[in-house]
Length: 110
Image (cartoon, rainbow, N blue to C red; front, side):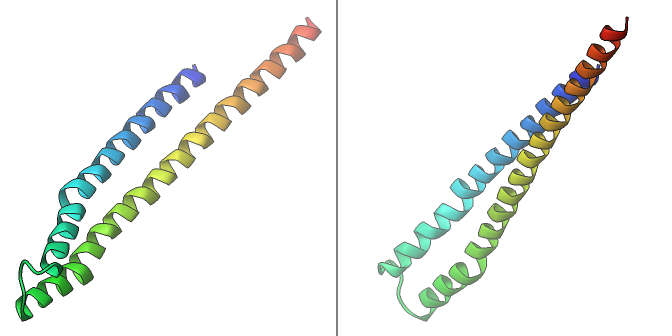
């Protein structure tokens, strides 16, 4: 029974991890990469002047690092979830080993 619950919990955690990585990809594709492209275009001369310089400065120093921090947070959370999966797997293995040793012990008595 306990093994079934742990396997179910593992599947739930894996599903969360998958969704988290999908969100990370969305952030990369729809936020960070377009900002990078816009900054590069302005730096290549599409827009010149003080406004262009201010745009590049603001996007580069405020917006892109903010999006990067969100991505970093997702990566850290993802690593923590993977650690949780490892802990659940080890716990399941330890419980199975304990139950099997008890079975062997009682099997030897009877």
